[in-house]
Length: 403
Ligand code: GLU
Image 1 (cartoon, rainbow, N blue to C red):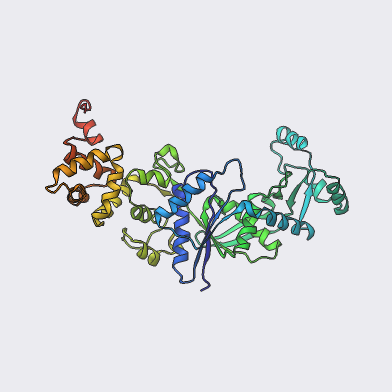
Image 2: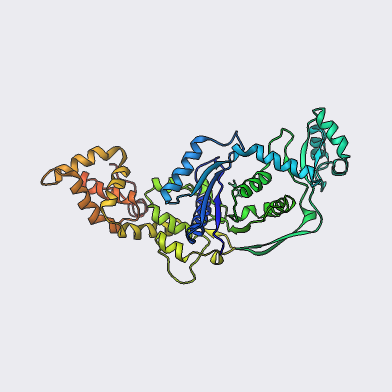
């Protein structure tokens, strides 16, 4: 088997979302399943207005927290713009692309007055334009986009998750490669970069299925080897809508803040779309690498069940060496950390605060579902305070007692 060269290619326009983390994990698992597999990281930061360095840091931090180490990169897509342009010019030269001088006002008019028009730009006019005239107009500095000439026929591929996928080329419009301002589009950049990085298997969310035929056509027109594709199913909230902030936490960092352990998160993410084929549910990273295969990733959207995540987290809390939970628990105590240490010291015969905290953690960890729960349980012992469990309080008390 050729060693897989896979990549995770997040756009740094937000935190590491659960869906992105799952994509990163599947790529990592595939890379690690082969001794020479490579997991590369590429930051897709060509959208300068929406990308930020802080988000890049947050994404990398989320990946480190999950234990997803990468072998190459991070490569920044914005550094490759010249290479992307060169690919577009290559296609132009080969007659596989053409210059489109449609006036922006004309485009706006078509959009407004003929919204149902199948071809949303005067295709005939530019597609057939004499190349010499096109060069002349370019030399005169006339603004234009470069479009790929989609050939007739159909485009198919054997998706590692979806099986045979087929698109009629007539349903794909002649995609823009370079916009009027000279910036490369996503489909061009991704093909140029994946080829430059030697990626031979693209694993990503199935929201990218409709981009895939366009990308395959570009590989073919450029004479580049076409990678394999695997499109993982969407992740939905309990209401059946795509998982988002509306469902509460949706980024990996938020789950960390809620007291979820990284090994539980990784295990849980793996099962969002993949099943081992038997009833096992708890997998450490090594077992996951061994058990995981793209063949057992389903096509049906996966529902994110927080209850299950918390249950799983409880199991991992129990399995942990309690000493490794001391620091996370102290962190979860936040502003009360100092006070907790003082109280713990007062409760230890030798004034050893850490020893007392460890003792409490060992005693209470198996009953807590999250690190936050555990910190709350510690408060009871250290501060003599009762922290009511919200649901139980709502059921059994008329009002929350003041504390
Ligand atoms: N940057 C794209 C995204 O975040 C990923 C593109 C890809 O994996 O091909 O959706």
